[in-house]
Amino acid sequence: MALSLAVSPCPNDTFVFHALIHGLVPGAPPVDLTFADVDVTNTAAENGAFDLVKVSYAALPWLLGDYELLHCGGALGRGCGPLVLTRGQRDLTGATVAVPGDRTTAYLLFRLWAADQPPARIEVVPFHQIMPGVAEGRYDAGLVIHEARFTYQRYGLTALADLGEWWEKDTGLPIPLGAILAKKGTVDAAQATEWIRESLRLGWLDPAAGKDFILANAQEMEPAVVTQHIELYVNEFTLDLGEEGLAAANALLGRAAAAGLTPEVKL
Image (cartoon, rainbow, N blue to C red; front, side, top):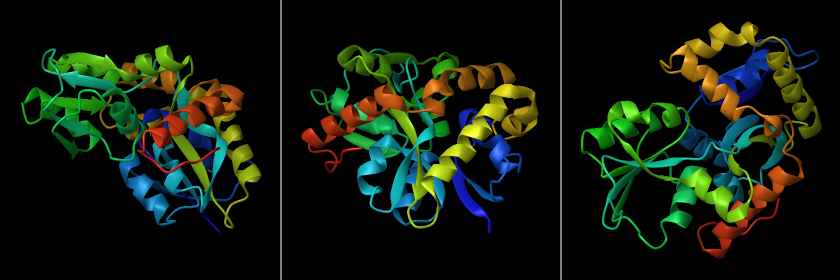
């Protein structure tokens, strides 16, 4: 029976899961793959739609009743946080800000960071539409993720804040972005962890094997940006969350609960 898997088409996910998706992991079942933005998978997971699913750490308080957090496969690290972009330096009070999802880690960090300068209006926008929208004046500011770190200057935009830098300076911890969940009662979490870790190991062993698959799904990113993306988001925390990664996730969710932004949860 096929394992239903939902991840983003971003290079870090396609790199990590290439071998598993293509039947190259010994003992792993066939995979029924769905590509979707994280805002879509956050909602789908709340409905129990997939066996394995990539979601935002910020969405975990609503999902851990039905899913178990795997300590591998996700996106967590340093120097990889969301950016707040504008067409010029400005205060956000009264601004309209485009965000990639209302339960994304990016938006949760933004709410914690912007507590003293709340914008007037938030609009949820697919992340690939945010930078053009800010550049064209549809939004006063945009909260961006992924490869936008490497390309926002092309739109004539300014980074008002690096929320990862802010988080790291404030906590000393890496930033927890995306998590992999396994559906309880359907997937053995320990087995799934080993499948994903072996898929990642195979990717590191032979990076060229998944190159065509990664580039074909990289939403028109050029190869140099794809390489930067993978190097930034696929790291030691992808292989094993470890004590530091778990501390980072608990710090984020603890602060969010204390601020009344999410239900309280302990990982």
